[in-house]
Image (cartoon, rainbow, N blue to C red; front, side, top):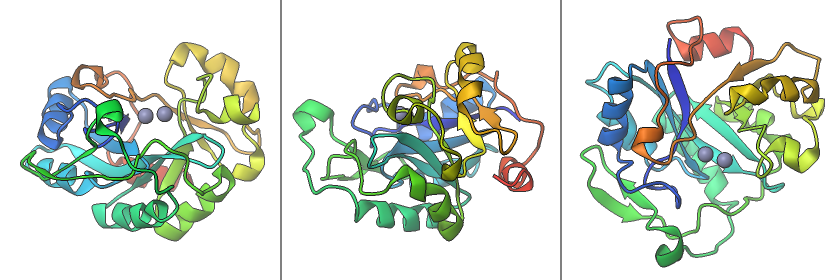
Length: 232
Ligand SMILES: [Zn+2]
Ligand SMILES: [Zn+2]
């Protein structure tokens, strides 16, 4: 099962405007992926469109966001349905600072439908830190029916290791994203040893050509069932 669980759309301030639901689905199919996840910064508002756009493709879609926590740590939160994702979206949105986006600087933050038509523009700047701590995330995922993992943990900014120096066991994570797999050996000593870690490698694509090739795989047919069976 080939996956890419960290992809941004045109809703993210830094996401290319060509990152529309149908373009993402078609590129993922061309690349031979089986499951993808849409993970815009602090928002799930393009997940319903991506979900609908993928229906006829055979591609499995998870709905989520890349949350920017109060500590300026990026973490990916995933849900099995757009409805669950949008319930979490509302929770995060209420805790996102009321700072308006400046489209001239950050881009338009486009909300799209399943035909790639623009149906709105997100007015709040989505890249700010929200008022949710990294320590709250696993508890919130239990509440909203999702799973989460700290994003690009090898990066020197916006990562749990750059912010906290390591991954505190109290966070409750057992799944981690290492974008650059060459850095994995340096990361393993920073993870809690309470549970065997599961590592995923994703593209963090902001442009269509950045979406992963069919090179990262997990031994399952149904990724969500697999995550649940490994008690993430
Ligand atoms: Zn990030
Ligand atoms: Zn990202």
